[in-house]
Length: 119
Image (cartoon, rainbow, N blue to C red; front, side, top):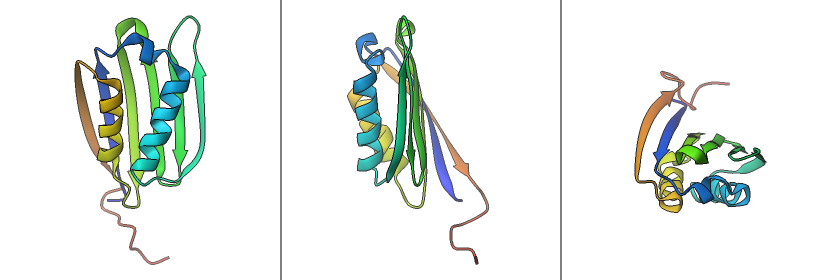
């Protein structure tokens, strides 16, 4: 496969954290870097009256977040390739947001291809 894509469903998260654009931006950038990713760019947006959406583009794919503070819920994607560990990034995010419960779905992307093909 070419990459792994983790879909992360976080429930019961502190609504103040889910409405804090700067906190979420720093968290996803840190998670990307500590997982071994190369951050290329990022963009986050705070909604009125509440909620945040954002994306961190990495050379190895992306991390993204969309929050609904009024429901204490966040939807997060961690998609990586080239040996970057999406599980490490997911751990960092879960530890920081401390959800009451969470669910993950892991997808293999680009099967049956591998990075070792002839150019």
